[in-house]
Image (cartoon, rainbow, N blue to C red; front, side, top):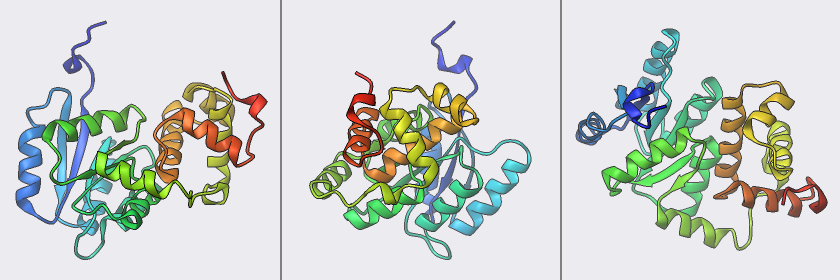
Length: 228
């Protein structure tokens, strides 16, 4: 099997930002990125929802949405929440100028699987897109530092997760793969991956290992049940 990313279906990306120059710049770069295809754009949350719905009706909901957080009519947090509720397999990456901990948490709790600052290098944006599709959370270093500081006194407990998310994180702690989690819960492997990504984002964690430790700390599993 070839390692050439052009041999595989491209990652489809939708751009949401109320500044046309930002959308133009992102599109110009991403159009040159192998294995990535921009399938649409919108200037605000309401327009984004309408256009993504149109794509989804044609069986082409985007893989990743790059989402501005501060927009007129419907802000990025609420738009992210609605996207994840309607198209849970679409990943959303917040792209913003703000690094306040409350804003970061709001975006992650709405379902964003990444948080980048608008001064990020183009390669960082491409890396975040690929990380999202791979089920990883990608945070700007300054954002990660802000979250790390807040996690010294963790604000998130098991009560912050849905019952299904608690099931998933317990299975992660037991060392189950996304495929195994999907099989046990009767959902697709990609859906299981999305659950894991959402859990990591919501809790501000960077890896499955951290999620396993968190599950033990919160009493969702016994330490003896964890893998390794």
